Length: 222
Image 1: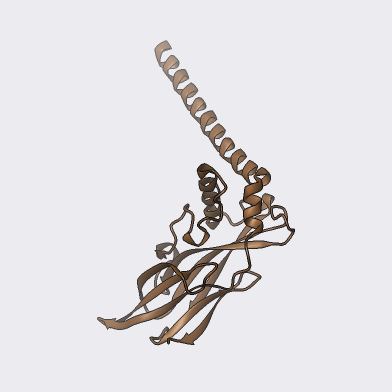
Image 2: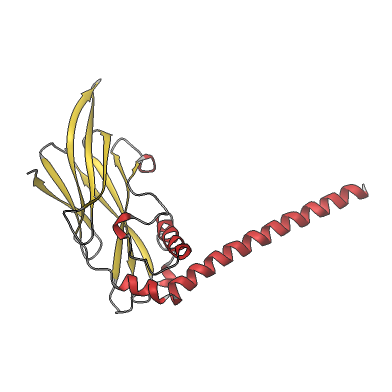
């Protein structure tokens, strides 16, 4: 019985040690992102240099066909460069059941708490695409979560690699917790553009308003 009590005591101590270790790791991670957002001048300068964006990509229907009584739409999705609307930095093809497609973009706003010039800035991360018959969480990924999007490649070039990774990981985490970094002046919203009856011969250009609203402009394919 004494031996049993000793083992239970040792087990309890190990569990307590594991909890303390985990808590310390979480605190260190939180402290690190806090320091990065409040003290790193290179990060603040990079965010301050963000410019207002209008066009952030486009999509077009490449085919529509019926299979066993079900309509499937194949689209080509293109993301364009921040400094050149004609430059393609990401291009993917998706086949969606139906003709109504949702495109999700995570819009991240930075308040004057972190922006040096006192003006709000934003960045935009493409998340996923899905049809009306598919649950959002089962949609097709556009950008790779927790990584630096090609659209912002070089934005944080003056930061150390570990700091860049830390920043993007925390920014992507706003997908699950939109106000997780609110105390530092960072919030997130979703831009969700919905199209009905997508048709061949049309191009759907994605545009962002200054308030962060995602909307399409439909133009004929040239």
